[in-house]
Length: 393
Image (cartoon, rainbow, N blue to C red):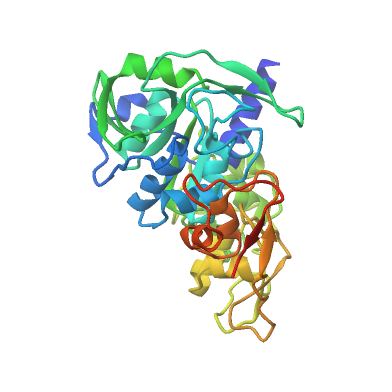
Protein backbone atom coordinates (compact mmCIF):
# COMPACT_ATOMS: atom_id res chain seq x y z
CA UNK A 1 0.00 0.00 0.00
CA UNK A 2 2.84 2.37 0.88
CA UNK A 3 4.55 1.74 -2.48
CA UNK A 4 1.27 2.39 -4.28
CA UNK A 5 0.84 5.74 -2.51
CA UNK A 6 4.40 6.75 -3.38
CA UNK A 7 3.78 5.88 -7.04
CA UNK A 8 0.57 7.92 -7.10
CA UNK A 9 2.31 10.94 -5.60
CA UNK A 10 5.15 10.66 -8.10
CA UNK A 11 2.71 10.32 -11.00
CA UNK A 12 0.81 13.45 -9.91
CA UNK A 13 4.04 15.40 -9.59
CA UNK A 14 5.37 14.39 -13.01
CA UNK A 15 2.13 14.54 -14.98
CA UNK A 16 1.23 17.90 -13.43
CA UNK A 17 4.09 19.48 -15.33
CA UNK A 18 5.45 21.60 -12.51
CA UNK A 19 8.96 21.33 -11.21
CA UNK A 20 9.34 20.32 -7.60
CA UNK A 21 9.49 23.24 -5.14
CA UNK A 22 12.89 24.55 -4.16
CA UNK A 23 14.18 22.65 -1.15
CA UNK A 24 13.84 24.54 2.12
CA UNK A 25 17.62 24.69 2.55
CA UNK A 26 17.90 26.58 -0.75
CA UNK A 27 15.36 29.27 0.09
CA UNK A 28 16.48 32.72 1.24
CA UNK A 29 15.57 33.73 4.78
CA UNK A 30 13.21 36.41 3.48
CA UNK A 31 11.62 37.30 0.17
CA UNK A 32 8.99 39.72 -1.13
CA UNK A 33 7.25 39.82 -4.50
CA UNK A 34 7.49 43.37 -5.80
CA UNK A 35 4.88 44.96 -8.03
CA UNK A 36 1.71 43.36 -6.64
CA UNK A 37 -1.04 45.96 -6.18
CA UNK A 38 -3.99 45.02 -4.00
CA UNK A 39 -7.53 46.39 -4.24
CA UNK A 40 -10.57 46.09 -2.00
CA UNK A 41 -13.21 43.63 -3.17
CA UNK A 42 -16.37 45.18 -4.62
CA UNK A 43 -18.94 42.68 -3.37
CA UNK A 44 -19.40 40.85 -0.08
CA UNK A 45 -18.42 37.45 -1.45
CA UNK A 46 -16.13 38.32 -4.35
CA UNK A 47 -12.80 37.91 -2.54
CA UNK A 48 -11.65 35.11 -4.86
CA UNK A 49 -12.34 37.20 -7.97
CA UNK A 50 -10.58 40.20 -6.41
CA UNK A 51 -7.48 38.16 -5.59
CA UNK A 52 -7.53 36.59 -9.06
CA UNK A 53 -7.86 39.96 -10.82
CA UNK A 54 -4.94 41.41 -8.84
CA UNK A 55 -2.86 38.29 -9.54
CA UNK A 56 -3.68 38.49 -13.26
CA UNK A 57 -2.75 42.19 -13.32
CA UNK A 58 0.66 41.33 -11.88
CA UNK A 59 1.26 39.17 -14.97
CA UNK A 60 -0.01 41.84 -17.35
CA UNK A 61 -3.47 40.37 -17.90
CA UNK A 62 -6.14 43.04 -17.54
CA UNK A 63 -9.43 41.65 -16.22
CA UNK A 64 -11.74 43.37 -13.77
CA UNK A 65 -13.06 41.74 -10.63
CA UNK A 66 -16.62 41.92 -12.00
CA UNK A 67 -15.68 40.39 -15.34
CA UNK A 68 -13.73 37.60 -13.67
CA UNK A 69 -16.63 36.83 -11.37
CA UNK A 70 -19.00 36.74 -14.34
CA UNK A 71 -16.83 34.07 -15.93
CA UNK A 72 -16.96 31.69 -12.96
CA UNK A 73 -19.38 28.77 -13.32
CA UNK A 74 -22.19 28.46 -10.77
CA UNK A 75 -22.75 25.37 -8.64
CA UNK A 76 -23.77 24.18 -5.20
CA UNK A 77 -20.26 22.67 -4.96
CA UNK A 78 -17.45 25.24 -4.44
CA UNK A 79 -14.97 22.86 -6.09
CA UNK A 80 -17.06 23.17 -9.27
CA UNK A 81 -18.30 26.77 -9.26
CA UNK A 82 -19.37 29.79 -7.25
CA UNK A 83 -21.93 28.96 -4.56
CA UNK A 84 -24.70 31.44 -3.73
CA UNK A 85 -25.21 35.17 -4.25
CA UNK A 86 -22.15 37.42 -4.43
CA UNK A 87 -24.16 40.01 -2.43
CA UNK A 88 -25.04 37.47 0.26
CA UNK A 89 -23.96 37.38 3.89
CA UNK A 90 -20.42 36.30 4.69
CA UNK A 91 -19.92 33.41 7.10
CA UNK A 92 -22.21 30.73 5.65
CA UNK A 93 -21.33 27.32 4.30
CA UNK A 94 -22.84 25.67 1.19
CA UNK A 95 -25.45 25.33 -0.07
CA UNK A 96 -25.98 28.85 1.33
CA UNK A 97 -24.11 31.91 0.04
CA UNK A 98 -20.43 30.98 0.22
CA UNK A 99 -17.90 31.57 -2.56
CA UNK A 100 -15.66 29.35 -4.65
CA UNK A 101 -12.60 27.17 -4.14
CA UNK A 102 -9.31 27.05 -6.01
CA UNK A 103 -10.17 24.77 -8.94
CA UNK A 104 -12.63 27.00 -10.84
CA UNK A 105 -10.45 30.06 -10.18
CA UNK A 106 -7.38 28.39 -11.70
CA UNK A 107 -9.46 27.14 -14.62
CA UNK A 108 -10.65 30.64 -15.45
CA UNK A 109 -7.14 32.06 -15.04
CA UNK A 110 -6.01 29.52 -17.62
CA UNK A 111 -8.73 30.80 -19.95
CA UNK A 112 -7.06 34.20 -19.64
CA UNK A 113 -3.75 32.65 -20.73
CA UNK A 114 -2.05 32.11 -17.37
CA UNK A 115 -0.26 28.93 -16.36
CA UNK A 116 -2.31 28.32 -13.20
CA UNK A 117 -2.40 25.27 -10.93
CA UNK A 118 -4.91 24.70 -8.13
CA UNK A 119 -4.81 22.22 -5.32
CA UNK A 120 -4.79 21.37 -1.65
CA UNK A 121 -1.93 20.00 0.38
CA UNK A 122 0.65 22.63 -0.49
CA UNK A 123 3.32 23.38 2.12
CA UNK A 124 4.59 26.67 3.46
CA UNK A 125 7.87 25.99 1.67
CA UNK A 126 5.92 25.67 -1.59
CA UNK A 127 4.60 29.20 -1.05
CA UNK A 128 7.99 30.49 0.05
CA UNK A 129 9.52 29.05 -3.12
CA UNK A 130 6.95 30.91 -5.19
CA UNK A 131 7.65 34.19 -3.41
CA UNK A 132 11.40 33.67 -3.71
CA UNK A 133 10.91 33.22 -7.46
CA UNK A 134 8.90 36.45 -7.65
CA UNK A 135 5.48 34.83 -8.09
CA UNK A 136 2.45 35.69 -5.89
CA UNK A 137 -0.07 32.97 -5.03
CA UNK A 138 -3.72 32.94 -3.91
CA UNK A 139 -4.37 31.21 -0.59
CA UNK A 140 -7.68 30.22 1.05
CA UNK A 141 -7.87 31.08 4.76
CA UNK A 142 -10.58 31.62 7.35
CA UNK A 143 -11.62 35.20 8.09
CA UNK A 144 -8.77 37.58 8.83
CA UNK A 145 -6.38 34.69 9.43
CA UNK A 146 -8.55 33.13 12.10
CA UNK A 147 -8.68 29.59 13.35
CA UNK A 148 -11.71 27.74 12.03
CA UNK A 149 -13.49 24.44 11.82
CA UNK A 150 -13.47 22.33 8.65
CA UNK A 151 -16.83 20.78 7.74
CA UNK A 152 -17.55 17.98 5.30
CA UNK A 153 -20.17 19.02 2.76
CA UNK A 154 -22.03 16.80 0.28
CA UNK A 155 -23.21 18.50 -2.92
CA UNK A 156 -26.34 17.54 -4.81
CA UNK A 157 -24.32 15.35 -7.17
CA UNK A 158 -23.04 13.32 -4.22
CA UNK A 159 -19.49 14.66 -4.32
CA UNK A 160 -17.98 15.71 -1.00
CA UNK A 161 -15.62 18.54 -0.16
CA UNK A 162 -14.31 20.36 2.89
CA UNK A 163 -15.79 23.81 3.53
CA UNK A 164 -15.51 26.37 6.32
CA UNK A 165 -17.48 29.37 7.50
CA UNK A 166 -15.85 32.73 6.70
CA UNK A 167 -13.77 31.29 3.84
CA UNK A 168 -11.62 34.15 2.50
CA UNK A 169 -8.72 34.67 0.09
CA UNK A 170 -5.42 36.50 0.30
CA UNK A 171 -2.44 36.92 -1.99
CA UNK A 172 0.74 35.40 -0.57
CA UNK A 173 3.49 37.85 -1.53
CA UNK A 174 6.40 37.23 0.83
CA UNK A 175 7.83 35.94 4.07
CA UNK A 176 10.43 36.42 6.79
CA UNK A 177 11.78 33.72 9.11
CA UNK A 178 8.75 34.10 11.41
CA UNK A 179 6.05 35.84 9.36
CA UNK A 180 4.25 35.71 6.04
CA UNK A 181 3.25 38.72 3.93
CA UNK A 182 -0.33 38.73 2.65
CA UNK A 183 -2.58 41.08 0.67
CA UNK A 184 -6.12 40.93 2.01
CA UNK A 185 -8.83 40.89 -0.67
CA UNK A 186 -11.21 42.61 1.75
CA UNK A 187 -9.33 45.92 1.75
CA UNK A 188 -6.35 45.43 -0.57
CA UNK A 189 -3.91 46.13 2.26
CA UNK A 190 -0.68 44.30 3.06
CA UNK A 191 -0.50 42.37 6.33
CA UNK A 192 2.40 40.75 8.17
CA UNK A 193 1.10 37.63 9.91
CA UNK A 194 2.87 35.21 12.22
CA UNK A 195 3.65 32.06 10.27
CA UNK A 196 2.14 29.89 12.99
CA UNK A 197 -1.17 31.75 12.82
CA UNK A 198 -1.14 31.56 9.03
CA UNK A 199 -0.58 27.81 9.06
CA UNK A 200 -3.43 27.29 11.52
CA UNK A 201 -5.88 29.22 9.35
CA UNK A 202 -4.60 27.82 6.05
CA UNK A 203 -4.92 24.24 7.26
CA UNK A 204 -8.71 24.51 7.78
CA UNK A 205 -9.40 24.16 4.04
CA UNK A 206 -6.52 21.78 3.49
CA UNK A 207 -3.74 24.21 2.53
CA UNK A 208 -5.61 25.29 -0.61
CA UNK A 209 -3.89 27.59 -3.10
CA UNK A 210 -3.60 28.69 -6.71
CA UNK A 211 -0.06 29.03 -8.02
CA UNK A 212 0.69 30.82 -11.29
CA UNK A 213 3.96 30.44 -13.16
CA UNK A 214 3.24 33.22 -15.65
CA UNK A 215 1.71 33.27 -19.11
CA UNK A 216 1.08 29.76 -20.36
CA UNK A 217 3.51 28.92 -23.16
CA UNK A 218 2.25 28.06 -26.58
CA UNK A 219 2.95 24.44 -27.51
CA UNK A 220 5.59 24.31 -30.24
CA UNK A 221 5.94 21.35 -32.56
CA UNK A 222 8.46 18.77 -31.30
CA UNK A 223 12.08 19.75 -31.95
CA UNK A 224 13.97 16.54 -32.56
CA UNK A 225 17.76 16.65 -32.44
CA UNK A 226 18.00 13.49 -34.45
CA UNK A 227 16.44 10.09 -34.82
CA UNK A 228 16.71 9.27 -31.12
CA UNK A 229 16.76 12.67 -29.34
CA UNK A 230 14.48 15.55 -28.39
CA UNK A 231 15.32 19.07 -27.21
CA UNK A 232 13.14 20.18 -24.31
CA UNK A 233 11.07 23.30 -25.03
CA UNK A 234 9.82 25.92 -22.58
CA UNK A 235 6.66 24.58 -20.95
CA UNK A 236 7.43 20.93 -21.65
CA UNK A 237 7.06 18.32 -18.96
CA UNK A 238 8.32 14.76 -18.88
CA UNK A 239 4.88 13.16 -19.10
CA UNK A 240 3.78 15.29 -22.07
CA UNK A 241 6.97 14.52 -24.01
CA UNK A 242 6.56 10.81 -23.31
CA UNK A 243 2.96 10.88 -24.51
CA UNK A 244 3.97 12.80 -27.64
CA UNK A 245 6.43 10.08 -28.63
CA UNK A 246 4.30 7.13 -27.53
CA UNK A 247 6.46 6.00 -24.61
CA UNK A 248 5.85 5.90 -20.86
CA UNK A 249 7.34 8.59 -18.66
CA UNK A 250 9.03 6.08 -16.28
CA UNK A 251 10.82 4.52 -19.28
CA UNK A 252 11.87 7.95 -20.52
CA UNK A 253 13.10 8.88 -17.04
CA UNK A 254 15.15 5.69 -16.72
CA UNK A 255 16.65 6.10 -20.20
CA UNK A 256 17.83 9.60 -19.30
CA UNK A 257 18.82 8.71 -15.71
CA UNK A 258 16.30 11.18 -14.32
CA UNK A 259 15.52 10.75 -10.65
CA UNK A 260 12.91 12.23 -8.33
CA UNK A 261 11.59 14.94 -8.75
CA UNK A 262 12.15 14.32 -12.49
CA UNK A 263 12.86 17.95 -13.35
CA UNK A 264 13.72 18.82 -16.96
CA UNK A 265 14.94 22.11 -18.42
CA UNK A 266 14.49 24.01 -21.71
CA UNK A 267 17.38 23.15 -24.03
CA UNK A 268 18.05 19.80 -22.36
CA UNK A 269 18.44 16.94 -24.86
CA UNK A 270 16.50 13.82 -23.94
CA UNK A 271 17.35 10.44 -25.39
CA UNK A 272 14.40 8.58 -26.88
CA UNK A 273 13.94 4.81 -27.06
CA UNK A 274 15.51 3.35 -30.20
CA UNK A 275 13.34 3.60 -33.28
CA UNK A 276 11.24 6.45 -31.90
CA UNK A 277 10.82 9.35 -34.29
CA UNK A 278 9.36 12.77 -33.77
CA UNK A 279 5.78 13.07 -34.97
CA UNK A 280 4.97 15.65 -37.62
CA UNK A 281 3.01 18.66 -36.42
CA UNK A 282 -0.70 18.01 -37.00
CA UNK A 283 -2.37 19.85 -39.82
CA UNK A 284 -3.74 23.15 -38.59
CA UNK A 285 -1.54 23.24 -35.48
CA UNK A 286 0.10 26.45 -36.67
CA UNK A 287 -2.87 28.53 -37.80
CA UNK A 288 -2.78 31.85 -39.57
CA UNK A 289 -5.03 34.78 -38.90
CA UNK A 290 -6.37 34.52 -42.44
CA UNK A 291 -7.95 31.13 -41.81
CA UNK A 292 -11.72 31.12 -41.40
CA UNK A 293 -11.68 28.13 -39.05
CA UNK A 294 -9.20 26.42 -36.76
CA UNK A 295 -9.15 22.82 -35.52
CA UNK A 296 -8.27 22.54 -31.83
CA UNK A 297 -5.26 20.34 -31.07
CA UNK A 298 -4.62 18.30 -27.92
CA UNK A 299 -3.41 20.44 -25.02
CA UNK A 300 -4.69 23.72 -26.42
CA UNK A 301 -7.10 26.14 -24.78
CA UNK A 302 -9.02 29.11 -26.07
CA UNK A 303 -6.83 31.98 -24.86
CA UNK A 304 -3.69 30.27 -26.13
CA UNK A 305 -5.15 29.82 -29.63
CA UNK A 306 -6.38 33.41 -29.78
CA UNK A 307 -3.09 34.84 -28.54
CA UNK A 308 -1.26 32.91 -31.26
CA UNK A 309 -3.64 34.29 -33.90
CA UNK A 310 -3.75 37.81 -32.52
CA UNK A 311 -7.49 37.56 -31.88
CA UNK A 312 -9.69 38.59 -28.98
CA UNK A 313 -10.61 35.40 -27.14
CA UNK A 314 -13.96 36.79 -25.99
CA UNK A 315 -14.93 37.53 -29.61
CA UNK A 316 -14.02 33.97 -30.62
CA UNK A 317 -15.95 32.59 -27.65
CA UNK A 318 -19.06 34.57 -28.59
CA UNK A 319 -18.77 33.60 -32.27
CA UNK A 320 -18.64 29.91 -31.33
CA UNK A 321 -21.28 30.00 -28.60
CA UNK A 322 -18.74 29.16 -25.88
CA UNK A 323 -19.72 29.92 -22.29
CA UNK A 324 -17.70 29.94 -19.05
CA UNK A 325 -15.37 28.17 -18.45
CA UNK A 326 -14.80 28.31 -22.23
CA UNK A 327 -13.65 24.71 -22.62
CA UNK A 328 -12.52 23.54 -26.06
CA UNK A 329 -11.75 19.98 -27.14
CA UNK A 330 -9.24 18.35 -29.50
CA UNK A 331 -10.79 18.09 -32.95
CA UNK A 332 -13.29 20.89 -32.31
CA UNK A 333 -13.54 23.31 -35.25
CA UNK A 334 -13.61 26.95 -34.17
CA UNK A 335 -14.93 29.70 -36.42
CA UNK A 336 -12.69 32.75 -36.47
CA UNK A 337 -13.72 36.40 -36.76
CA UNK A 338 -13.72 37.56 -40.34
CA UNK A 339 -14.91 34.22 -41.70
CA UNK A 340 -17.53 34.14 -44.42
CA UNK A 341 -19.89 32.37 -42.07
CA UNK A 342 -22.72 34.51 -40.77
CA UNK A 343 -22.14 35.94 -37.31
CA UNK A 344 -25.04 35.05 -35.04
CA UNK A 345 -27.41 37.95 -34.36
CA UNK A 346 -27.84 39.04 -30.76
CA UNK A 347 -31.31 37.91 -29.65
CA UNK A 348 -33.75 40.55 -28.52
CA UNK A 349 -34.44 38.92 -25.15
CA UNK A 350 -33.06 36.26 -22.83
CA UNK A 351 -34.93 34.13 -20.31
CA UNK A 352 -32.98 34.00 -17.05
CA UNK A 353 -32.04 30.48 -15.95
CA UNK A 354 -31.61 29.28 -12.35
CA UNK A 355 -28.16 30.26 -11.12
CA UNK A 356 -27.71 33.12 -13.61
CA UNK A 357 -26.40 36.49 -12.49
CA UNK A 358 -26.66 39.78 -14.36
CA UNK A 359 -22.91 39.92 -14.96
CA UNK A 360 -22.85 36.32 -16.21
CA UNK A 361 -25.69 36.95 -18.68
CA UNK A 362 -23.97 40.11 -19.92
CA UNK A 363 -20.66 38.29 -20.41
CA UNK A 364 -22.39 35.44 -22.24
CA UNK A 365 -23.71 37.83 -24.88
CA UNK A 366 -20.67 40.12 -24.97
CA UNK A 367 -22.49 42.98 -23.25
CA UNK A 368 -21.59 45.42 -20.50
CA UNK A 369 -23.57 44.54 -17.36
CA UNK A 370 -24.26 48.16 -16.25
CA UNK A 371 -25.76 48.81 -19.70
CA UNK A 372 -27.84 45.65 -19.40
CA UNK A 373 -29.05 46.76 -15.97
CA UNK A 374 -30.04 50.18 -17.29
CA UNK A 375 -31.78 48.66 -20.31
CA UNK A 376 -33.95 46.56 -17.99
CA UNK A 377 -34.40 49.16 -15.21
CA UNK A 378 -32.65 46.92 -12.67
CA UNK A 379 -31.49 48.92 -9.61
CA UNK A 380 -28.82 48.06 -7.04
CA UNK A 381 -28.11 45.31 -5.93
CA UNK A 382 -28.85 44.23 -9.53
CA UNK A 383 -30.63 41.00 -8.69
CA UNK A 384 -32.34 38.96 -11.38
CA UNK A 385 -34.64 36.00 -10.98
CA UNK A 386 -35.11 32.67 -12.67
CA UNK A 387 -37.38 32.91 -15.74
CA UNK A 388 -37.25 36.71 -15.77
CA UNK A 389 -37.12 38.03 -19.35
CA UNK A 390 -34.25 40.43 -20.00
CA UNK A 391 -34.00 42.77 -22.97
CA UNK A 392 -30.62 42.47 -24.69
CA UNK A 393 -31.01 45.27 -27.27
